[in-house]
Amino acid sequence: MRSEPACLEDIDYRHPPGLDRSLIERLATCRWIAVHENVLLIGATGVGKAWLSCALAQKACREGRTAVYRRVPRLLDELHLARVDGSYGKVLATFVKADLLVLDDWGLAPLTEPQRRDLLEVLEDRHGRRSTIVTSQVPLAKWHDTIGDPTIADAIRDRIVHNAHRIELKGASMRKGRSESGDKGRKKE
Image (cartoon, rainbow, N blue to C red; front, side, top):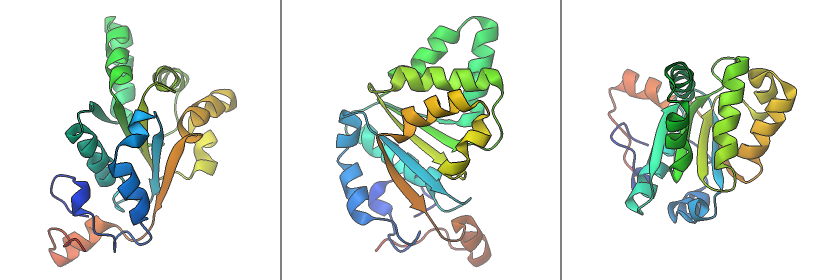
């Protein structure tokens, strides 16, 4: 994958190792968005989760779909500020009505009670109506620890995971390789 703007056609299937070309080709059809499925990208820092999520969103936009990208910490900050200034419903609607919502950097820090509830609101309103991509360094088995409340954790996981295409990215950080070698990007296969 490359450091330029994300585009599925630029995927180098040699890195990260094990990336399933047939699954990416199926996702490139955007049928998963039409039937309101999700994509879950799990892997270590720098393996290309955010890049791949943006490439999928860019493809969705080229197919006439709407997409919104947010890092989870910023999404939660926006929702908190919206509660304070009275625009919560309007801000929530922005995240709910997009055909595709990309939630990047899921689970970087434990969630507070209000954050758990806000995230559940977004996912509940989207469930079965819209598609969501979640990127995370946190393995699914540890999501309960990050979310905190077991009941809300079950509800959040259920709305994301049960109909998700799961992609686990492995390998070394692509950022580290580029910074050490001066490589601006890898040629596609």
